[in-house]
Length: 69
Figure 1 (cartoon, rainbow, N blue to C red):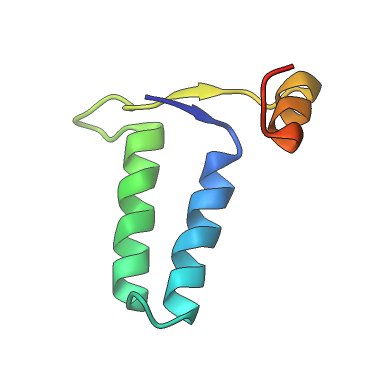
Figure 2: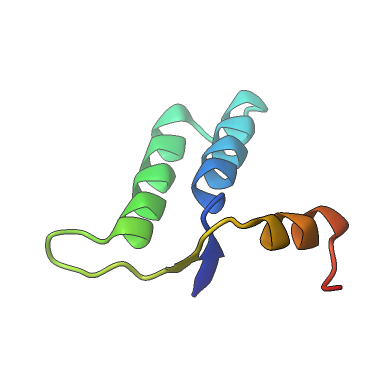
């Protein structure tokens, strides 16, 4: 799976927003955040599951417009 470098921030923000809204517990938010981090960085036993696309001005411009130029 390919993800943007900013996904780390966006996923954490979305999980903790769900917690603030009462949709998930703090423990669930922590668990899901840890699972994402393991997929993003890998673990001692598993390699990362994500290919991370670095943020560049072009990537940010495309994301801001919501479509490919």
